[in-house]
Amino acid sequence: MCPPNYFGVLYEINPWMHREVTVERDAAQAEWEGLRSTLVQAGAEVEVLEPAAEVPDLVFTANAGVVNASQFVPSRFRHPERQAETALDSAWFRTRGYQVSELPEDVCQEGAGDALPFGGVLLAGYRFRSDAASHAYLSTLTGAAVRSVELVDERFYHLDLTFCPLDERRAMVAPLGWDRYGRRVVEALVPEPLVLEDEEALAFCANSVVVGQRVVMPSCPVRVGRQLEAWGFEVMVCPVSEFLKAGGGCRCLTLALDVVLAATVD
Ligand code: ARG
Image 1 (tube, protein in one colour):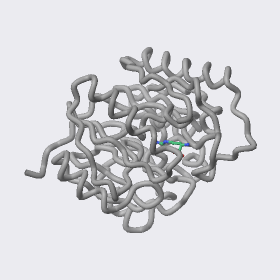
Image 2 (cartoon, rainbow, N blue to C red):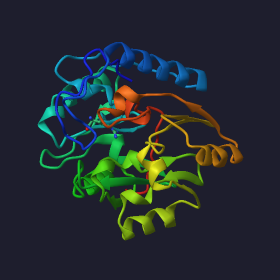
Image 3 (tube, rainbow, N blue to C red):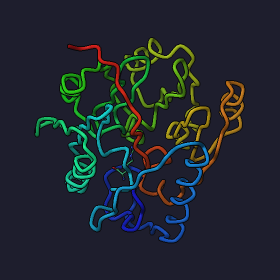
Image 4 (spheres, rainbow, N blue to C red):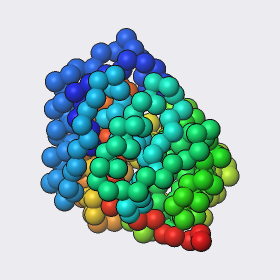
């Protein structure tokens, strides 16, 4: 995670962002601390990336890159506004001994925001922020098999707004963000989906952080909570309204480091 010292809505690169909306600095700080302590309470260990001026979206560490054990594939951001983040993210991982593997310069890929492991493959989104062409490179660099899903609704510009792995068999899914082919890909991949209704998806339910049996969510509609609890999960709601102003929820504010992708490609 990266503290929100320099967070703000200073430009508009997704439909949720409006420059005229002000971010309450203290509220953002308090929400961020709340998320961090909730994750720790849920059983996670949190490491911190130093915040930096002039990169207000650095807080959304989900977009730093793709982690695979001791390998890190840094993002190639679509928008110039975020491109300066990459050097900071790469330096953090390099300092900690990760092998940094780079994507070619001419493809965009926005890290774990658009690539989530499930069922032995890496489910990867493309169109608004990541290029479909990045998927073959991701596969070559990590050795993981990649399944591509096109994102079709600009409000869900990253895959992690539409898909949230829960355990080996289950995931929260928001079909509103995908075309018919993408829906079929996910249907074939996820044996027990929790299909989010449009309102639930628009409340960023899929942008949750799962720590073992605990699901840390930006908000939790009753129906969703009932299903998660029936499956044995404990729901922990963590308000992140200041960050929603920039189009990011709980999961966007984190990057999982304990990811090991299944190697299926030689
Ligand atoms: N303002 C950020 C952007 O538009 C939000 C990023 C949200 N991250 C995510 N993983 N969905 O890039």
